[in-house]
Every structure is written in C-alpha cells, then in structure tokens.
Image 1 (cartoon, rainbow, N blue to C red):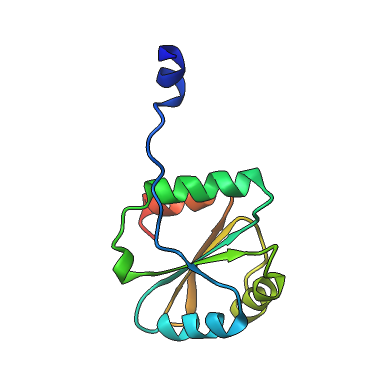
Image 2 (cartoon, rainbow, N blue to C red):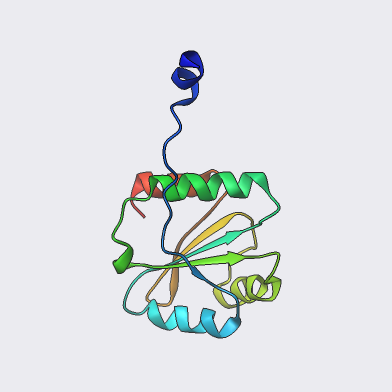
Length: 125
C-alpha cells in the first residue's frame, strides 16, 4: 500500500463542519437577514452526485476558518428544489450543483461551482 499512499495520500480523518440544514424559504429569508452582520455560506449539494459529494468533502477537509463567525447552510437540493429555485430567484444566481454561495450584507459576494469551490478556500473568500 505504500505506493498508493504516496500517490493518493494517506487516508486522514474526515472533518465535519457545523452545517445547518436549509430546508425552507423562511430559513433563506432569515439567512439574508443574518448576512447583514456576518457572512453566510450556502452549499447546494446533489445527494445523488459523486462529484458533489467529493467537492463537499474537499471543502470540509480544507476549511480553516472560525465557524462561529460564519453561518454555514447545507441544502439537499433534490429534497428541497423549491428552496434552490428561491435562491436562484432571490439572489440572481444561476442554479448549479454543487454550488457554493457566499452572502454578506444581503449581497452575493462570491459564488462557485464544481472544482472552483475548493479554490474559494485557497484565495480566502
């Protein structure tokens, strides 16, 4: 197994963030209000997509920020398509999956999808 660990890295413990589940439009409206005071991160995840799972895991494993300073929201978009549609409508962002949206002061300050989500961590957004 030594060569595989060299190529792919040793398996490290999965890190988990303190995600709040986003499952209705009232929570989205509340998140917009909270964004007046602190950043809100919305992760739109397709639970049937392996790429979405991989990106979520990479984001969680590489996240290095104070979780108390940010509201983290996780949206299972297959279960809550209405909320995903409301996000697109209220925030003016094109629906993608996986997708990361960062709100601050009731504005979208950054959005990314697929592999670009992990880049958010490296550029400090």
